[in-house]
Image (tube, rainbow, N blue to C red; front, side, top):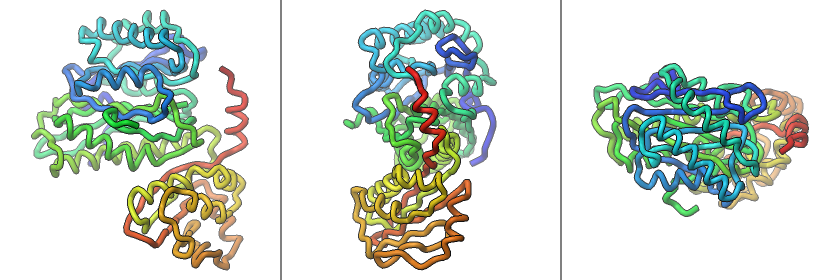
Length: 407
C-alpha cells in the first residue's frame, strides 16, 4: 500500500465538490457532492439505532440494486425525526441532483449530519445544487470533506494505492465525526454529531466482494471507537467502485480481496483514529488493547466496554490511574471474563493479576496517565483472540460544549 493525495477524487473517474449554501449560519461549507463518470458497484453500512434519519432509510432502498453513481451530503442539519416532510425533502434533493447530473435518481445516495428534529432549509439546498455540480473537480475532495464537518476541527481525508495483479488500484475516503460517536454499523441487508464516511475506488470488484470488504474493514476500525457512548441516527459508510482501473476483477475469498481489504482497513483505521483525536473537548487519545480473549466477539466486547466507561474517561481527564474502573468495565462486558486470570497493564506497568492489585510505583503510573497518548492492555488469559478499541477522556470542556448546545 502506498499513501497518495487527492482523497475521494484520487481514483480514476471521480470528482468532488463542496460549498456553503446556508444550512449553517457560519460561512463554512455545508454541502458536498461526489460523482463518478460511470455507474458503480455500491455498498453501505448503516447505524443500528432504531431511530434512523430519512437518508439512511432511502439509501438502504437504493442499494438493493448494488449500484450507484453519486453521493450528496449536507452538514448542519440531520434531517432526522422530521416526519414525512423530511423524507420529501430528501427525495427532492435526490431528484434535483439526478437532473443536474443526468443520471437516474436511484443512482444517488444521500447523507446528512447536524441537529435532529429541524426541517432542512430546502430551498437553499436546491438552489445551490447546480453550482455544486458545476464545480465538480478532480481537486474537490478537500472542499467536499469540509462540507460534511460539524463540530470537527480538522479535515479528515485519506487515499492510498495498491496493486491488484499488474494494475494500480486507488481508494480514497473522506469522513467526519467528533461527537455523538459510538458507531455500531451493519450491512443494510442484515436486521439490526454522527459518523459519516464516503469511499471511492477505481477497483473492478464483484458486488459481494465489495460488501464483504466494507463489512470487514468497518468492524476493526469505526465499530471500535467511542467518544461519548451515544449512537447516532445517521451513521453510515458508503463505498462506490467504478472499475476504471481495469484490474482483474476482485472476487470474494480471493487473495486480491485480502489485499483490497487490508488497504481499505488501513484507511478506515487512520480515519477512525483522527475522529478520536479530534473529539469534542478531548485532551487525550487512549488505546484499549484486549488480548487472549475466548473469541473475537469477546475481545471486541471487552475493548468496547472499557473504552466506553465514563468513570474511566473521567479518570483519564483527571490523570488518575484508577485500575479498578478498568477491571469493572471489563467485567461488565458480555464476555468470558475471569478476574483470577485477568492481567491489566497501564503503559508498561502491570497493575492487576491473580484477582487483585500489584504493588507498583504510583508516581510512574501518574506520569503515564498525564500523557496525551495512553495505552491500556487487558489480558483476559482465556483464549487466542484480540481486539483494540480507541477512545478519549471526558473533559469539562466536553460537558460545557454540549450543555450549551442549542437546538
